[in-house]
Amino acid sequence: MNAGFDEGHIITTLEMRMKCGVGKCGRCNMGGHFICLDGPIFTLEEIGRMHSDV
Ligand code: FES
Image (tube, rainbow, N blue to C red):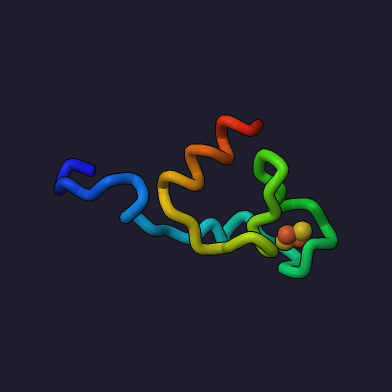
C-alpha cells in the first residue's frame, strides 16, 4: 500500500491454513469462507472482508 497499490490489487495466498484441501476438515475456515474451496488466492480487500465476517 505504501507503493500506491490499492487493496484490490494486492494479491496473496492463504494456502498455509489448509490441511485436507477439499472442504472436509474445516481447518481453513475463515469467517464463513473455506480457503481451500474459495481460494487460496485472495486480494487484500477480500481478506479484510473475511476478518469482518468473523
Ligand atoms: S483445508 Fe480442509 S476444509 Fe479446507
